[in-house]
Amino acid sequence: MSILKSNFWQLSRVFLPHWGFFDIIGDDIQLYIEIEQTRKIEVISFLYDIKLSNLFFNQYAHFAMLQKNVVEHFVSDLQNISDQGEVYSLSSYKILSQILKNLEQVKENNFRFIIKIKNNNHLDYQNYFQSDWIRP
Image (cartoon, rainbow, N blue to C red):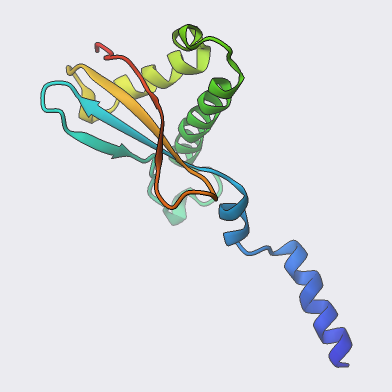
């Protein structure tokens, strides 16, 4: 009986993995913006409210996941280009800057965004990309 019980728990771990596993194998991407006038740097996180009424269709959650996906897609595109001059012609760069232009923190201010990555080998975030100043 104890063998069945232990095998059952091992099998259940396959279907219900520990979320720490995903943190270990993947890079953690952090997005920052810097406002030119104040030189203030803020972390940008795409959060949304979880409500019971939005349990099955949550447009805010979908939009937040889309924004995070654009950031991850841009980082992936950065890894695949050979010339840094090509960055500003990437569609993922254009979409990300357009998303950031609509944030409340950057309305009517020049800003730039900074992407930092923390992977398994580092304890802190390493600078990965810093854009030029973007006008609203």
